[in-house]
Length: 260
Image (cartoon, rainbow, N blue to C red; front, side):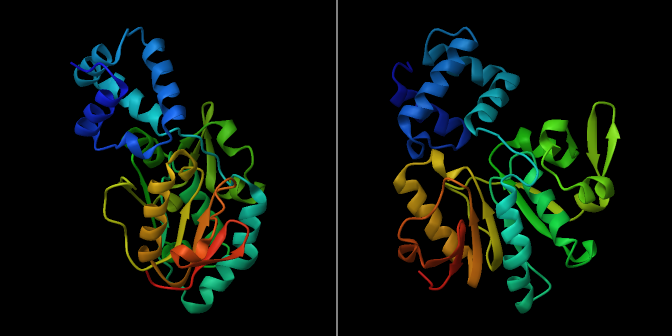
């Protein structure tokens, strides 16, 4: 019988591989309790039974859990730093960059990276790995269909070049889509890609415990080449980044300076 939140966390781990112990408890429990109430279930036990039986309900739960908030070129000033300083720095070493967009949600971020990189190198040379724990979000990303809210902060040059209207939505071009490979990945348990020149992981680590974040930063270090760059979100500046083999080069951008 699944009675307590502790029982619930264990059951979810068995079902999905998602370890809720790694998320900030008060915040996550409040979100889950609200979702259970919204779906008219009285307790954790009845909700888990329903999750096992109802794929649509299960997908809704995973989607809710992973807090998918995304937008093209979110926080424009940071993308300006990426364009003016970080990408030129990386291209000095190689024009064949290995880039990982971690926790990519519905694809806004990796597609933004492709469009920005296209100002420097041909689309045919751009290859980005984009991963997320939410399979439904990944399916939306592969579709590449976005509403006006997603694209509201996009530079006009990219919108005119790479999008076409489809009813009330906007479809990203196939030539951009071909540059991104989407894969399912759990930051807390799966193996990380290796030899990356740039990792972009923004606005997800704020939901994790300090212990989980420590492990993720260490894994990011191992995933990056020496002198490569980690790009984090606006509320995720890394305190004492040297502990993880990084040094800040700009706000929200960290260079790997040591192996762990």
